[in-house]
Image (cartoon, rainbow, N blue to C red; front, side):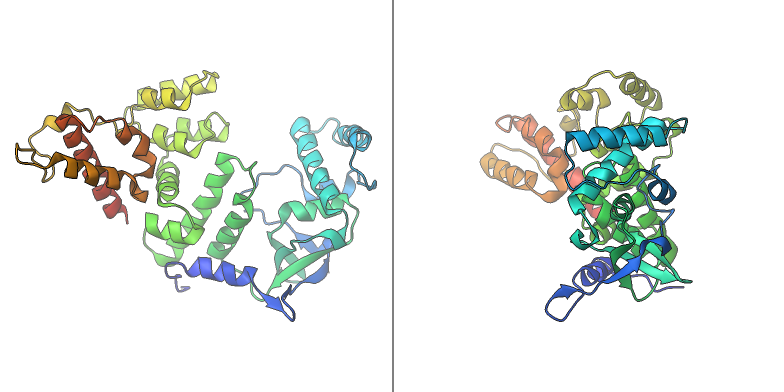
Amino acid sequence: MAKPLGIGGAKKWTEALASHTEGGGHLNVQSIPLEVVQQDPENSRRYLITIDDVKNGPKLTASEFDEDVQDQLTAEITAFFAGVADKERKIEEYLSLAQLAASIGSAEGLLNPITVYMEQMVFHLVAGHRRTLAHFILGEKQIAAHILANKPDKLMRGVLQWRENEDRQDLSLAERLSNVARVIQAWEEQSNVAISVRKLMSLLSLKKTQSTWFSKVIKEDDPVFRQAIEGGSIRSLEVAYNVASMDDISERHALISQLKNGVPYAFNQLKKKIKSPLKTSIQESEKPEHYGLVLKKTTNIPVIVKVIQAAVELPELEEHKNELKKLNLKRPKDVLAAWQIIYQLLEDAQEES
């Protein structure tokens, strides 16, 4: 069994890869034949376009990607995919790749080489899926590549592809979750223990809030919830986390049904609909236990308020900051409620770490 990386090990590995240079600080890259480059079938980018499509499809030959060129290329792509399933999406993807191809211009214009490893005389893509497809559209025969000395394991491929894909704004929530799930699975297979929020933070350079959200959503196996993400009804990680936090399955499914039917919700309205567990009522805070805080006539409440205000700014409470700030800390009941909520949240964060 491979020895699992320590905290930050994967991050250091990928940073070392990214900074690998020779001579005067230039990237150590080689030009490799496109015809021996293969896609990684496990990459979370869910493109319908394949290497065969761009090998055989329309090429970008004009130096300017102006409106006339785009119209002509669109007509050629539409004809190329005539009668093909998912025609509209393939046309959209091809045009997006053509835009990237136009920005690269030529094989010499690629500033960020792809990353590959070699196995049985074939180069397998680790990072640079779109750049590779764009080179085919340019009609190029070669591509600049950073060749890894050894085949990266499943965990390393997942981490590298996360870093590659997360920079893209058009990545869907389903694709992001798929990428993180691969990293989690690979880590747990190596270490034989469940991954913690803190380790996931370290591997993917996430904030603790993001790591918590990803962990919660990925563990949720409700098929209706999963389908809503796959189908694009739930597109935000934060919304997905809040929906996954709903204990009442019937209420959750009713909300998902409304989202699927296009019911418009502002985010604040959506959170009210979700009834997040954070919304501990002030009445609940009147229970006898207030986690060590008892307000008496002699209690210096302004000092307690300052402690609460400082705690609200902690990274662990970032996702709940707005709700906590709605409490009126001039009222003793709200002070007790804020104290109780903060205590519970910090205690939960400590257990997760």
